[in-house]
Amino acid sequence: MGTVVQVRAFLPTQPTPARETELAGHLEAAIREIRRLEALMTTWQPDSDISKVNAAAGHSKVAVSPEVYEVLARSQEFSQRSAGAFDISFYALRGLWHFDDDLSPTLPSATELAKRLPLINHRLIELDPKAHTVRLAKPGMAINLGGIGKGFAVDAAVKLLKARGIHDGMVQAGGDLMLFGSKAGQPFKAGVRDPRSLDPSDFFAVCEVKDRAFSTAGDYERSFIREGTRYHHILDPRSGQPARGARSVTVYARDATTADGLDDAVLILGPQRGLPLVESYPDAGAVIVDAHNKVHISKRLQGLCKIVHPPTPGI
Image 1 (tube, rainbow, N blue to C red):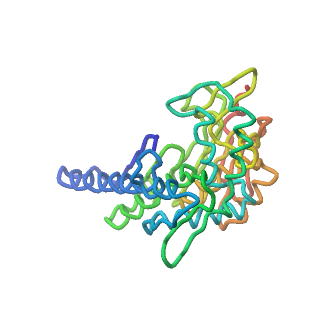
Image 2 (tube, rainbow, N blue to C red):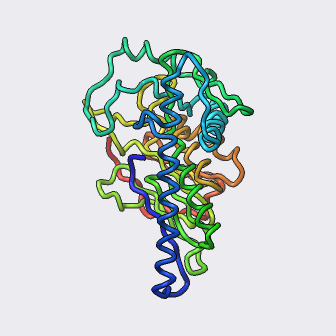
Image 3 (cartoon, one colour):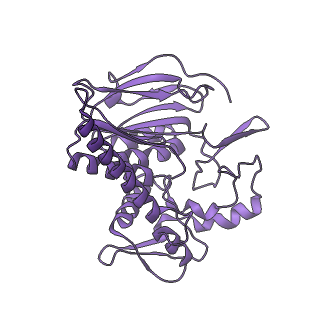
């Protein structure tokens, strides 16, 4: 998934060597589950479900696994509720921007960008809930689950760990984090990264979390600065340009899939439209650093999140 994954179990006392070996097996099983889902959803392998859907764009329906279908259905929900700010068909822009291993401070041509934009439309992703098939209506369309797949994988790993008797722990895949249970009976504390600090462990806010997910989207990962403007990998599907609504968004939700699906949408929409979207989901909240470096905390997180210091200024 192009990121670092951590899986941890928290115990009230030091385990015996036998128990420690058993726990290691459970944690490894959670990693295997994440890898299994990655193999279904990646665009880096031609035999994944998503690669097959993209290869058939404009032509045939493709049968996908139940897990992939579930993620696609949730993706459509986020697209509809965000008025298209979240749209997995943004992948029609692949190759125009260079934010991955090919990071390069080059901008796409306006002509090529204009040609690709009509291929971005979540309404043209056709889902059949009975047959579990997917069809992209136009040739050249493509989908990518990078904005929601990690959250789904985190939830799946947590479900596996709980089924194996681990009731207190964490699963993290990049900016997607689920903290379940507690830490020695006390809530976990999750830090919210300062989007302009050069220190990745510098948190401008700290929030108490128990049985909740945190997902962060920011303009500071996979980015470059050119002529005084920051360009980054979270693209606004309506313009094909990097999102300008905020510098970072951290979403708190009951599950990591919801948190992951909302954070990119809110980063694109900005606080004025993004906060009502978050608060329309039960028990969800957000901490936003807007484009002017101002902090916005949603109603549900007030009292749970404390500002440690103001976010660092900068481009």
